[in-house]
Amino acid sequence: MAVLEIKRYPDPILKRKARPVEEINGSLQKLIDDMLETMYDAPGIGLAAPQVGESIRLIVVDVSAREEEHPLIVLINPEIVYTEGKVDSEEGCLSVPGYVSTIRRANRVLVRGLDREGKPVEIEATGLLGRALQHEIDHLDGILFIDRMSPIKREFFRKRYLRKLKKT
Ligand code: NI
Image 1 (tube, helix red, strand yellow):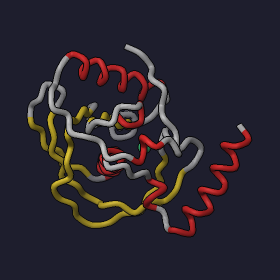
Image 2 (cartoon, rainbow, N blue to C red; image 1 turned 135 degrees about the horizontal axis):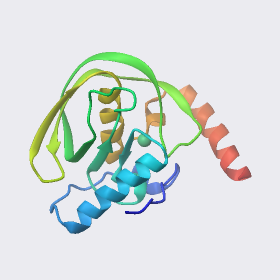
Image 3 (cartoon, rainbow, N blue to C red; image 1 turned 90 degrees about the vertical axis):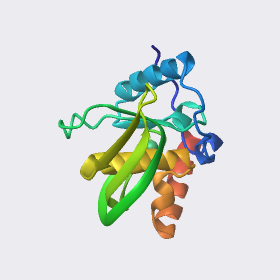
Image 4 (tube, protein in one colour; image 1 turned 180 degrees about the vertical axis):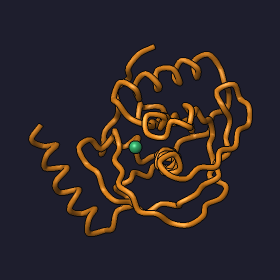
């Protein structure tokens, strides 16, 4: 296993729509293991494959440190099939280090996908898990949490963030 480099905004891969996984093979299993190691090393509660430079539909989520009833989730080709309600909460992203913002998301989601063995799974989630799943699936469509901020907040963010990037 290896800790991979996490791509940061404004890396163009983060804006790209990722392609579906077509084959569950050894190299995919290795990528999953490396993504888990990278997520725990960061540390973070979720990671999407485009964040480590692989533009494919694969996410890992582990919120067990804060919602211990939920085990580690690995999802291949995840899809949100149902949403209900709206809730505002603060979130951040490993690809946008140092920033958090209040983002409105669905309160409840039903997500379908495949686990790492290729078995179909269905997850119904609210709370932090529901939010993390929506955030990571957004990554597969090239959407960052900053894209869900109001236009005014996003403009302020861009100026501050890009100014800081230039300095480092
Ligand atoms: Ni993120």
